Length: 160
Image (cartoon, rainbow, N blue to C red; front, side, top):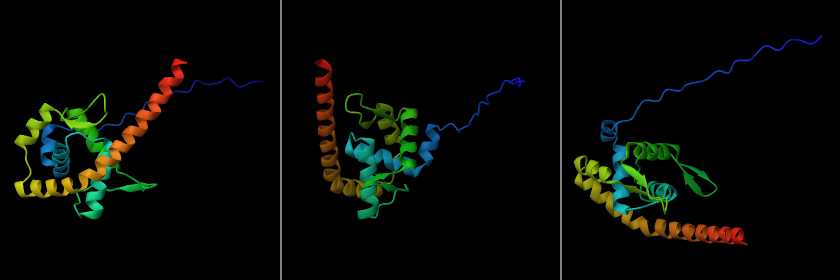
């Protein structure tokens, strides 16, 4: 006497997220500050940007509004990564396909020109970023070299 199995229905859960527009970014000082920092630096990886903002918060008392958690000794911020995804989605930021670093698009440059922060804020931000920039870029270069070495070794194994 076996029981007949009844078919189980799978439920599809749909999560609605509000669509973010350029107007939302104009009103968000945190995202505008983030764009100014990326403009000052030029190109930077997500990890480098996270490290830069963490150092600015801890050492220079420049709090942009991101919460950081340390995993090991590496800072992480869920809010920062979410803001980066939004800016990538809107086409304000792009990822360099070769180096995988974030940079402003031409749309992003135009957007930033029309939606600037006050000049005194930008100059202070630029001063602080330029103080911390060498440390972050050195760390990024080291990471990049390590990854290149690992990738080269992997390619070498495949050829044999």
